[in-house]
Length: 255
Image 1 (cartoon, rainbow, N blue to C red):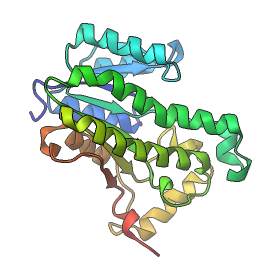
Image 2: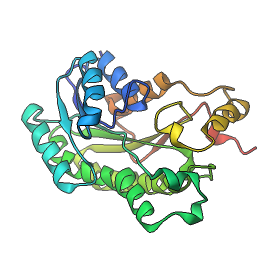
Image 3: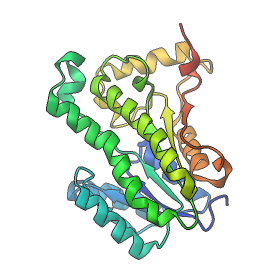
């Protein structure tokens, strides 16, 4: 039970097919105590069901576009968990039209929104989580994608936002390292999640990856879940500021 006695917060579980759910399952399997966030009553039922199956009744409403919501979230968490060992940030959003049209048509408001939700929310959450991790140290893990480095058709403004997220990981790692708080990202290969289905041409990406990836297949969501477990656990205690690729090796291939 690698995570026995450890506890943390999972932010961004959408449904049972999400990467955040897979990470939560792996952490639960190894004995971690979990808490979850949701945004609004419409999503609460899904998250409530997932939390219950993973032995948790700790749910908190949070709109990460509002500083006051993030602050209140961690105030509420502190009442139930006086410390955090890990924080999983699996939050991203962009307007659908900004993913469907050419990148150069991205609106100013759409650009701001994608960066606010997908990148700045990590900074806001790390800032508020820091006091709950300072005494014992901790791990913060976020999710990114290869579209931050290379042009992936249909990923558009989300790719730019993920590049910002990855830079934020490095700067946060530098800031928080003195408090023994590690900050890392996982770059998963294409997985058929709710978020991924919002990318135009996603089915084609799923078809191409097994042809090019060294392992000749797409990654499975449970493999990403176990990678998340590793990055939250003491086994990765010497790793910070990194992007861990869990994509069957696709990112190493040039042609």
